[in-house]
Image (cartoon, rainbow, N blue to C red; front, side, top):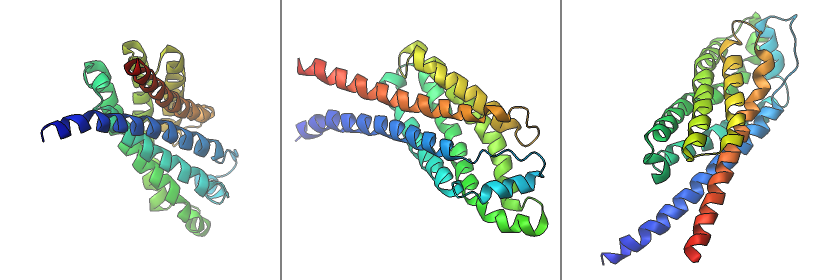
Length: 229
């Protein structure tokens, strides 16, 4: 009887690793697609409230932000699963970076959800020309959560590449550029437009997540081929 769980444990671990890798890949793709759909029209002559209203009324708002939210949910799940992966768990620096990024991704996921539903404020802005409470909350949450998550991704990309646990030195460039750029843009947008041009670098975060997930799949396939030999 004792041989049953022993036999099943490696198979369960392989299925878990496969699911984790695909969650990272799929999450990155959803985030990438959603980010590409984000309204980008620049309306500097309008107040912040009216700029928000214009974006809220854009037909791409709900599908774009819905995709980004789904992407963040999948990325968060994958990061927490990676925290228990032996290859990462046995490397203290990598495990710490993964754990921090997983925790910050929770806040970023909440921010993504608030960002999605904030479009319900469009009519209220039209009536008062000011940002309603929901929009105020999501702006505050994203001002804090986006830099925390993005800078954590940049650090994880570097540490993962240096330790050989996640991604590589080439894909790390995407994580670093995307993480720093998106963090600067998201953390300052409420106060100044000086870094707004960096918002598209968020796609670098999505691309790094996707590439890191593909790397895990290739590594798993390679390990399976070696075992078969």
